[in-house]
Image (cartoon, rainbow, N blue to C red; front, side, top):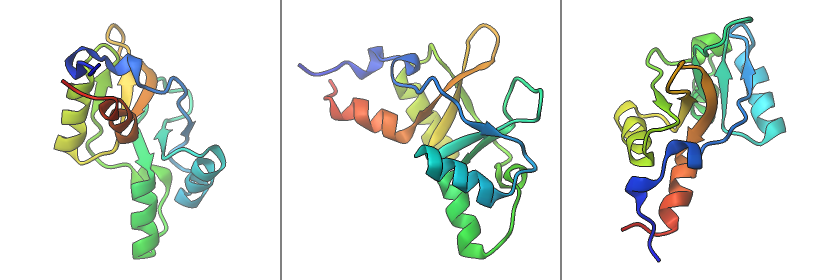
Length: 133
């Protein structure tokens, strides 16, 4: 039976665990966190802050390697960091990723705007692969 993608919420496909690091951490150390934990993105947060500045993904690491530029995690975060509510439909998350050219979104609680997880393009691909009407 095909899945109704319009009925699937971000909370149903997101990862509840968010790895984070400080913006002063060298990007090579962020890459080590990604490799050790087998993830493609890490949230960048100021110490003591409840909301991330953004996300550094494997794409930013690859770009830094390609250019040979030494960056900190904070410097690697792009200026535009879209988020998505856990209550939004998966299709909206896909639209945001496409519009902003990102492969990960921080998922926030609709009531308070605090991070509750992360959703990736792979999470969306997995649900799409189940069949869509």
